[in-house]
Image (cartoon, rainbow, N blue to C red; front, side, top):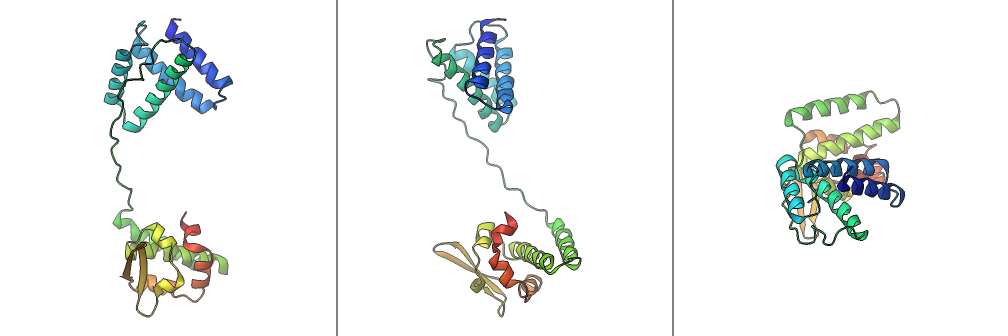
Length: 214
């Protein structure tokens, strides 16, 4: 067992018994530090800035930004422990530039061809409702989905709707995008029919949109 292996074992013990980290965190640290140990391949130069820099470069070749950040955080915490125990004279992370841009992920969307299937199932559930409460819940959920896709409003905008924002006579709904932006959107027949159901509006707004979609 070389020095690095000893240091890692001591650090994991410190994390478990002194920091009281959960088993999942300990396992993640063990995996990340074992990877660093294998990268060093028994070298005595594992405390150098150059070794750490080369290791981080190797991570960029293999993993996505989110995984790289986690592994760097594990290694950084380990070297902080070594510094705390006076086991190194200079922390290699002190002058390392490890900033990198993380790719922005596009939001996931529901394929257009799936919408009829989704609504078909929801309307079928409404027909099969066994109680007035279930029926009203089904109508509420259908209205939520119909409004989202009929108007293109955000979920936050949907949650902020008030009864006065829906004009059943003119088939329109007021959408408050920001304190200074208000949009009027026209609604087609299916959603306006479901919203105008007599049993819906009191239940719909009393329980709020937010409770049904969060």
